[in-house]
Structures are given as C-alpha cells and as structure tokens.
Image 1 (cartoon, rainbow, N blue to C red):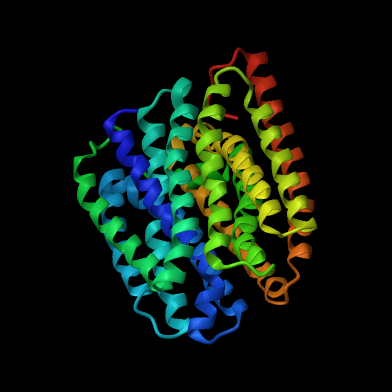
Image 2: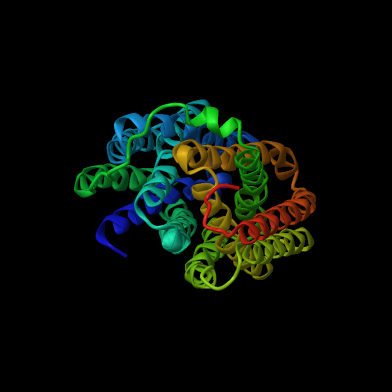
Length: 388
C-alpha cells in the first residue's frame, strides 16, 4: 500500500477501535453506573444510530469541504467527544457523549472508501477496500481485548481516553494526506441515488447486514459473560473476530481477482448464518470463539464485496452512495441493538441469535442472486460499466 492509503488504514483503525470498545464493557459499565444492563445496551444503540444517521451528512460535507479536511475536522471532534465519554457520571450523560462520538467518528470509514473510489482504479478497488479492512480488523481486535482488560484492571473510562488520544493525534497526522483531484463534486448526488433502484438495493442490503453482523458482535461479549466468565475473557474471545478479519480480508482481496463477487457474497452469507445459529445453541467461550471466526469470514467476504459494489454502482454519486451505505449499515445495527436489548437484559441470548440467523438467510439469498444477475448482465452487454 502507498503511504496515503496507510493513513486511511489508520483512520479506519481508530474509528473501529472506538466503536468496538463498548461491547466488552457493557456489564461493567452498567454496574459502575448502577443501572440495568439494558440501559447501557441502549447507549450502544444510540452510538450506532448517530454513527449511521450522520453518514449521509458527512458525504455531502466532504463533497464541499473535501475528503481530507472533513476527516481532520471530524476526528478532532470525535477525540473531544471520546474524552467526554470518560468523564460522565450518569447513563444519560454517557448516552449523549457516545452519540456525539459516534456522529463524529462516522465520517472516517465512508470518507476513506470514497477516497479509494476517487483515486484507485476499478480493477484494484476491492483489493484496496480489503486492505482498509485490515485497519478495521486491528481496531476490532485491540478494542475487544484491550477494552475488557482496561475495564477490569483500571476502569471502563480508560478505553475512551485511549480513543480520544488516538483520534486527536490522527487528526494532526492527516495533514500529510493529499486531496484527490476529484475530491469535491457538485450537488445532486442523493437525487441520483434515490432514482437508482440498483443503488437503493445496495443500501437495503447494507441495512440488513448491519443488523445481522454488527448486531451479533454487540450481543456476543455480554452473552459470553452470562456464562460466568470475566469481561476480560469475553473481550479476548470477541477479539478473535478481528484476527479472523485480519486473516480473511487479504484472502478475500486475492480471490476477488479470480472469483465473481456473488460467490464471495454467498460464502460470507453462509458463514453469517452458521455463526448466528451456532451462537443460538451455546454462548460458552470456546463456541463463541468459533462464532467470532465465522463472523470475521462473513465480514471479509460478504461485507467487502457489498462495500466495493457501493463504490461502483453509481459513480456520478459515489459520495452519496458510499455514505448512504455506511449510514444504512449502522442504522441497521442500531435497530438490531435496540430490539435485542430486552432479551439480552433478560438473559435470552439464544433467542436473539436465532432471530439473527433467520434474518441472515434472506439477506444472503437476495445479495447473492442480485449480484449474480448484475454479473450476468455485464457479461451480456460487454461489461466495463460501473452501473447496475
């Protein structure tokens, strides 16, 4: 990877680290603040909701301010909000602080993807998208394992301070990132998006995928803890997901040059169904580690393919589509977390995972068939068109 893309990889790392710091600390945070687990799970869903809703806004802002300037401003704001998360005294304050952090951190990954779409050829695009996912994997692994350890050894507040320092530092370092030549575009992107059935289909798939994969990841740490193990062990098991993405993402990138995208999506969807079904059967640590590996495979294979599709489906409105994709992904996650908060608080984790497994089936079928139909159509007309 070139140096600019490594800076983007660091951006995805920091954003993901903050996003995954909270799940391993849900139970400890609830005890510390003296509130039910469901109340703290709701703060996580508020974070995901703000993270999702602000994606289209930052897409519009980056069209006007530029990708790099938008990244620097939002990372600085995210650092301040993360520091505020460490200083709260009530669950309401925590919800507000995490919402502000989610809103600010939400610019990181879509802006990075848009930057890749603006600067990398179509032939190399999925490879670079999967390279960005290395940052996501490292952030997930470090947050899942480190946040739980910090919560036990020091305080749950320490993890948010780490996020704050990293975000502020990266905001400064990104001054070295060159702005892409077409990093600003005119308006009307969302108008084009809403007129494209193919683009709207990609957004629908992102919404459901967020509910399944990110919903499962949010539920996994407290589910593991419910079997009697510590937050540190639950976080370490969840960190296996990050390691799995780290292993499978380069493999998916290499296979994308030989396999059609629909085949990668099918493999990822099958892994998602298997992961949620297995978690519904047992939440013990050893089983959960296998679940985490399967979710990592699903993310590397299915999610990277859908992300790449989002950069290609409507090139004239790339910022709108990519930011809308990310917004739908986390809106789906927020809805899933909110709906699962009640069963989680009651200890009904098997029910929650079973529902996610059922939802993953039509997701996989629709995504696979739709992408296969697009591939067939492209071959029929001679290929080479970015549009679906």
